[in-house]
Length: 267
Image (cartoon, rainbow, N blue to C red; front, side, top):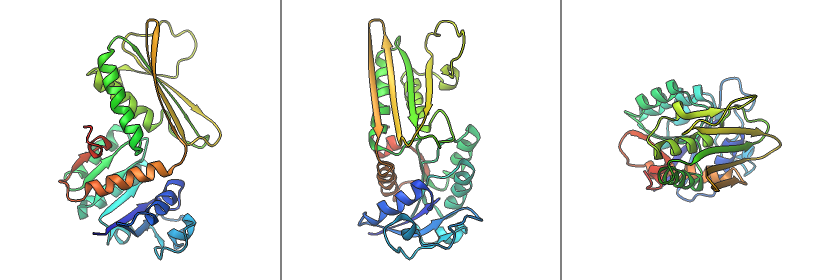
């Protein structure tokens, strides 16, 4: 069975990567390409923009038309666009894979509402290895409850949100392992005379520079020893492959808000 896919933000870095990845996936077909109104690439062929040759799918700003023949939509856009798209996907009962970062608690509430009718797979990082890393962080934080947790992330200079969605994913994993609220334990941007580190804090440090795709290290430090778990993304194709796996996994599932942990059987 061929799974028909629409790509949101199809002219962006991740959008083009998704289009290229779909061209290499035998059981999937690109049937829609969506971009925001007024974008300079509207009307252009999504495949040509991705450098794979004509896909005979033009970029459109009409969500209804772009989703008309789709079984799933892959979405690495902006919080506002993802929330609006979730409502459009819910109206058709589609699988909506959301890799957008920077989602607020209000955005997540709207996704949960949309997930009453749609199958939504949302993650701050679609990499299969990163989501396995999150499971390891959760277990380590649980087994080592008195160790300090610090998360360091490095991304390209154009990234607009900090901490990264992946850093927050890893922080949530640590908090879940200790059965605490990340919002209450999170510490960011230390500067000046901060005093001693608070027990149970989950610290974040965000670095930006160059063209780095993404690098994350979780440091779990105790007296006289520390455990470090690191993931380095070398190619955006890893996120595309994870999103494609999520779209395939979601076929036939009941409506709901899922994560990549569900896709990997780690939930």
